[in-house]
Amino acid sequence: MTGSKSQLKKNYILDKSKEVFIARGFARVTMKDIVEACGISRGGLYRYFSSTKDIFLALFQRDARDELEKMEVALWENLSARDILQAYIKTQKEEMTGAEPTLFSAAYEFFLENPEDRLIFQWQFDGIAEMLREIIEYGNRRKEFDIANPAAYARHLALVLNSMHLSAPLLNFPEQRIGENLDILLKPCEGK
Image 1: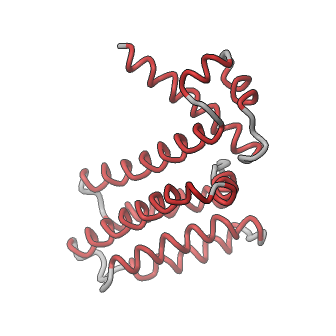
Image 2 (image 1 turned 45 degrees about the horizontal axis):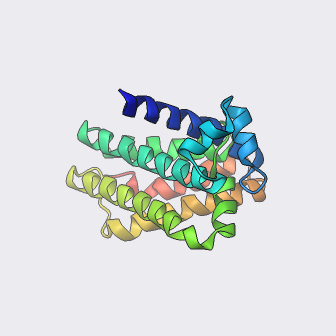
């Protein structure tokens, strides 16, 4: 039971930290900010994490794993490849249009400031591209899609989505334009 209590506390800290990072970015957040957000003692926080960097990396990796697990479950449940892909793109659109605040800006800031940790960003990107490749190959097998090079198309999707997350707010893209661009991405998956 201690392990699960410990994991619950760690996840609580990560959830509260995420709110702080979303609101303030990465560079402006201190351990004191996290302590205050969590309502725990400084020692209680340091029992689990040694720095804001340590917290951010754990949060980034946890969220990436959670996203990949959602897709694995959808594939395991034998859902339509088109539905899985459209649900994923819909989530991306909601994140880009501000329906829910996201960690993307803080992640970009973090990885710019911490080049030694960019392998983790690469791991996340590769994981998304691999997940998308699996969905596309699954759709090809089910005859929903006819995409000749699923790996290249998946990397393209991952790269464009990543770029849109960064550039859409900077370019002040309206929701309609974001939707149009995402629709173009899905054109090859409209099927037969």
